[in-house]
Image (cartoon, rainbow, N blue to C red; front, side):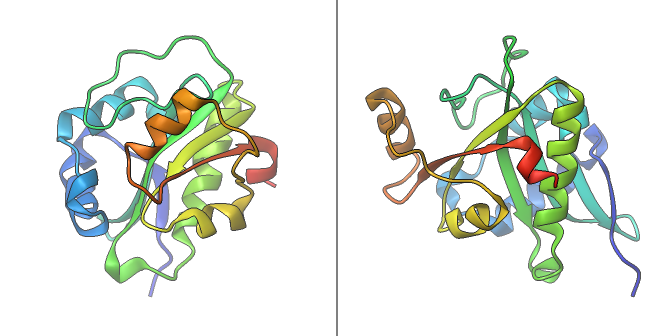
Amino acid sequence: MTAPELRPLTPGDLPAVMAIQKSAFDPLYLEPQKALGSRLKIAPSCCWGAFRGGDLLAYILSHPWPAGSPPPLGQALPPPPACDNWFVHDLAISQQARGLGLGRDLVRAGAGAAQQLGLVRGDLIAVQGAWSFWAKLGYASPATIPEALKAKVAGYSPDARYMTATLSELTA
């Protein structure tokens, strides 16, 4: 079996992204294609897919966004303001590709692209118990979080966690 190929996503990949999103996330987190497409539009170099034989197996949607202010779910985004932070919006692995290490590979690819844009740190909101995966890569939950950010994170789900990392640690 051939190893999956990693490459930046294109707008033509969005239907496959939507299919993986539907299989990987609880209905609460499903977003319209326009919202996901906006992440690809504002930072095409930071959105990657793992492919085998032309089939999308996994993806990461990420982009520059000010630290500590995660953008809303389900909404198309405007271009981000100037910042030094990389926000991971979505990382999803298809059922048949779990256990292949694609999540780690996609995070490294996205973080490397973010560094090329001059970004130095990253944040995300881990849902569905994914915080242990993110912690293995180098993300951690800050000891203190501003009340407004706590409220925003709680809006994702009761078990959601805000996590941060230094990009140089993610690409090492």
